[in-house]
Length: 245
Image 1: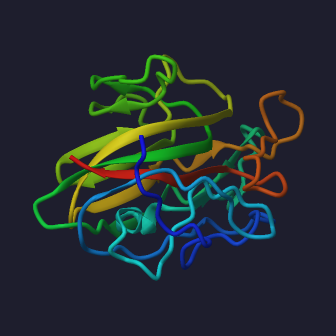
Image 2: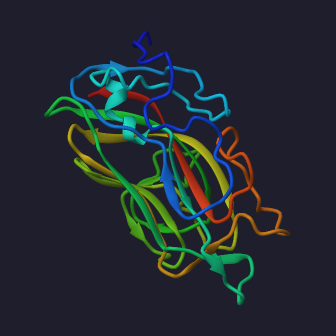
């Protein structure tokens, strides 16, 4: 559409310089700051880091007035809900922290709402969301609004304070001990100055473990992001575009 690109020189500050390596404690990597200003930006279309992390879009942290930089804290954001111990009664699960999150303040021009397109990649167990809308017919596991029906399964989501909305990333018709590998793009409405929280919550102390040997749905990789199989579950976000409404 002829939209200008932002920061074609490299990845933003604090981003992932290469593929994520060995498993460790639950945590967050990537993401930078947010700036001020207005306008629109399109797809940059390159990768970041010799290690091979697929960044989706490069963000130039030196130009914090560029619209893509408003969402720099979401770019290359990686959340790993790691295992903290074994759970013997269900050996294909593991103990975990039950809540891992990262919050950022979105940049932009005061009073402006932006359509933010994110590439969402995840290794998730299923949960079920009651109500809300499924705007992507080909990706029904993405849901806007609604509430958690299966509280004992991890629910991965992005919560925006303004305009207030919750975007669910792993909604399925039913729950099961299954790991899904997802890769899709979704548009979020985010106002300048809004708090955006990327979070996973589980109502019990165990999760389906991606690293478990045996089940055919396990041991999944996020191509270009995870260099080896990680335990637990994980999410990677990349900013594709930021457009003022």
